[in-house]
Length: 247
Image (cartoon, rainbow, N blue to C red; front, side, top):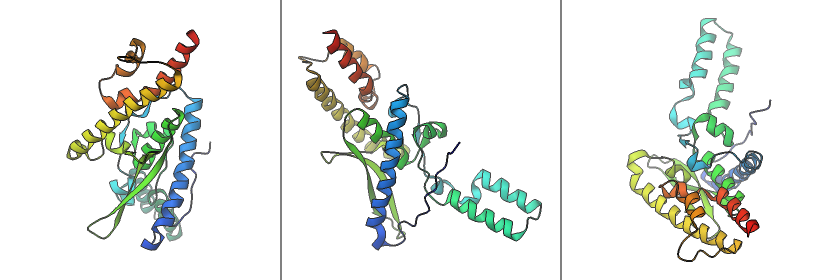
């Protein structure tokens, strides 16, 4: 089974290369979105991202240095215990750098297996999900300069009208310190829920009147949290189709 695909690239080497590097990363993220779309089409039973139980996880390179990875530490200790030749230890150091020195773009099943993912992982899942709902969205890279002079990049979701959504924040990024920002993100998501419901209602020719029918309420409001309610969309669209056929 082929599992890991390595792109050997040099990105964000200088400030002058930032814009070009962002374009290339967005191309890779677009490929990941398509992988996720194919997965969703083949596995419609896949839980929607905000119902999946995953959480935001820091990128591996921010969690620990290469030597701190358990797998790397075990192999390094073994090589030392057997007094491995210097060319072998050097080769291992190169491999350790490849494994721990870049980004890991995970598709949906790998994210679930990992219990979560960082911003590029969860945003690509969310974009794929939205496109399967018929809602145009794309990955979008933001960046900010840090006090130490470095640059922090972050991937979010950008909608056609220019508004954005941060799945990482909704999935726990920043913890309690970001509670206020998370609440605002949930408020925006709740507004999109209403727009989404109205939009597909109009396309399906369903008049909501004073409120959605009972079957829609059950489908959308089973979970109290607005971000979970909104993500009933795939099932909601199928229910609209069934209702129209029945009519």
